[in-house]
Image (cartoon, rainbow, N blue to C red):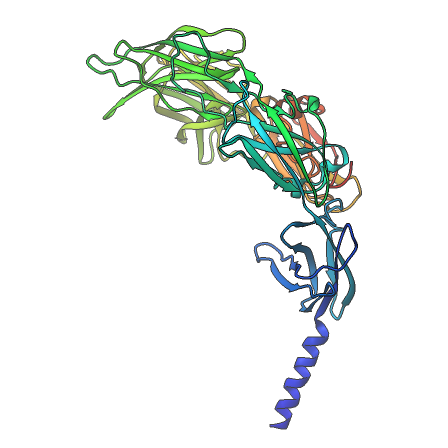
Length: 522
């Protein structure tokens, strides 16, 4: 019995020797005085798919805290108390912000600085000076403060019924912008007095339409910067009108759908004569089409692309027609189809393509789509070998640009042929953080057009490699974006235009390293 007790005591001592501890003091970043009641946590960073395990403690009256019995490993430090922010690691890169503990480590000099929140408050009014309820207000950091991306996600607010807003966050220099909730396209109010449905641009304090022209606001830790009145700038709006034809006799329940960068708007029903009007539309690129469905009968019009920027669009004719069978053949250059392959047709949306039809290619290389409506479609092939690519597409013997076939006037018995090349280009390279550390993460994108920015995309840590294969010949943009300016803070057009161009030929094997700025690097 005594031996068993000794074994248990020895095992407990051995386990204790293997564990680590982390302790220190919490202080006010402004006054440097100790702070009580701060919830300090260290989260053990596990390897995927294991969950991260948090360990915590509360600081005492003297600001001291201790977190004992920690397994060896790498930890992320966080601290919480109402009215304060933990910003100590916001301007460090990912590796500097981590705590690495070995077996038996006892860190006793941890210092956690808590920064009092800054407050920005004010009002949002329309062009008549009336309060705007439900406006979305956000702060955009200026200069060096722009690296505080994690905290700035909280620096926003919504206005109340008096148009008032109040938001808290990190101290610093900001520009403050307000926007109304953007209505989707298709609001069908018709005004006969000549007035326009109000649509407002995102407006920057005090009344600027661009962020760069907005006034800079100083937010001070522990204080409220108040009295900011933002007067919204009205945008010009436009109208689209026309008629839907081809509806079966006796039926009037066709619908008109509209799509913009804000997504698909609500469908509207034309009147008994098939006429429709869409009003209050801000300047933008739109796609419009009509559809009808009753039981097994489905009709659609060809989609119409419209750029509204100078004048209204009137007199449109959206003609409904049934889907038609579209057939064709697929061949691998110099050989027969030797594997299970599927072909897809995709319709173009803003900066992306959505699949609408799919068919298996048989061993003879033949395929058939049973119901294809008028429109433009991009051809896609699934399950290709690594370096295979779509080399050419023909419709009724005529080559098409890229892989996009134009069936806007209907299928009309068209036949398509797709040829697969087996020696596509490839590009690969190492992603390097500017400080040479394994920071997370860069977004690497390869695109040959603005509509294809989602085709080849990878998130890669510093020091790791990216690789894209099966690329058709042509000119591409290599887009790299790091966490200090996350992908999406610029428009797709801006990212595409700013990125270097690379020309690829069939069979090219290109190596091209890229560099990104980690968080905190200006």
